[in-house]
Length: 368
Image 1 (cartoon, helix red, strand yellow):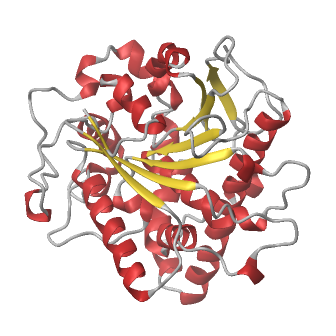
Image 2: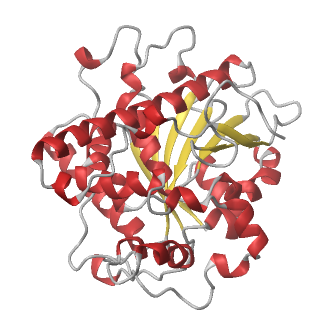
């Protein structure tokens, strides 16, 4: 079932409300790089048995959504080598990209407000872990979650106080690049950043690599970044060409595409680190606008697949360390909970959808 909202984002699927339930949870999911939210459709038939309503959302430039306008694209600078050498140009580009992601955060915020206005969202009960909204961003979509947390205090609440409804914000299997962490040494592998691969060939190789299973020994030096297991096979090898075509929007990730520019320029400009830092630490009271709401009681959940990409596991390690260091320093951070899905890859929502849904809804720290 499709839901029509006054939003530039597109609701690809809506499972609807579980019959007779007065405490169901609304789960809103945003996708990652090139794969749109169709990759989450296996969760839909599981929604009602888990007392949930699932809303799958496509980001701008993806299937069904409003394409970015010229003004939007002007905030996504694709600098030339000469411009990268100009400190003034680089500084201006950084400010533009911050503005770009603030607008993306506002779009997610407004979509959640629209859902509540529609009257089909239950107020959150945090003690009972029921009702309300769980909003999740998978992979690159995790940057939409950090942007939302970074900027929500600057969005006036008007007649809808979202913190009464939003129970949890989930960073779902996001890699270190999307969270703005540095690469380890030696650097972890990614086809998207491999200089030995021609730019036009990177995306097809990335799609197979990103869906593999990578065994992990529990320490940084056992991260396997390049060669996945043959058994289980990469998820993409189990899909038909029709299924892949139905769930992807390749131009967005190709050279010149909006996500491609966002990733490569955003990394160089420190955009993702900026968003993560603003998201993790509670804003000072004077930075909360009149009528704004800092969402201080909203749980942030970091969900990681045990056999996911090395870059995802590395991000989780660094996030844990950053929060531990912040605690020692007496800094005020959001409530972040870490959840692990055993033997899961980056596409757990397709290969093991019930585990994926339980990781978003449940109280456990480990799912298997």
